[in-house]
Image (tube, rainbow, N blue to C red; front, side, top):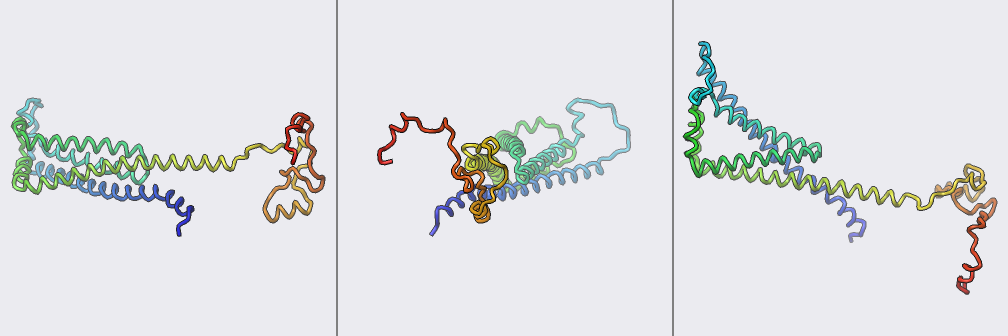
Length: 270
């Protein structure tokens, strides 16, 4: 049979279990996201090295030209793809840092970065699958990687759609977990603060005990047999009690004695 103490202890442990559950899944999602970002950045480095080795020329570079035609030889697709991978990796590392350090500041920054990543992916997906006329305005990619990526997506369109939906769902779930974890940590901190205030309020004496020097009593513990037994058996300091076995009951100050008017209001039985 469960007692009220067990129910209370389970209630107090439940926030910790919920936080552990959120941290586990958020850490798992961020590890997968970090793997995706690292793979994108690594593949971008591979494409850049391949492009540099293929198009390396010892001839001196011409004067800089900022026209659109001059950007044709610039590997913009490689840098865009690698930048997206690096940003994804940094987002995942920020989330892992917030989970491991229980930092609500890191979790807030992670949520913001994840929101930017989600909006960028949604905008790119909508623009690609709805209207492709904007792709004609992009500069020519001499690396050929953009055309390879386009042909691969078109050949595996159904698979790419499901993979994209899965990645978006994972990121949305990670954003929800980050918000839930931040709220749960704040709630746990508030509960701990309330419990500390409650315990301190119970332990704090309602009335401060008067100084023994003001009462004219000698300082130090009492040495009478009764006080010694109370101190050894219960750990009580009998010097804080009003009753003194050696000197009898402490005299009541005159200002605390009941007046005739107050005595007339006492019960007759008393």
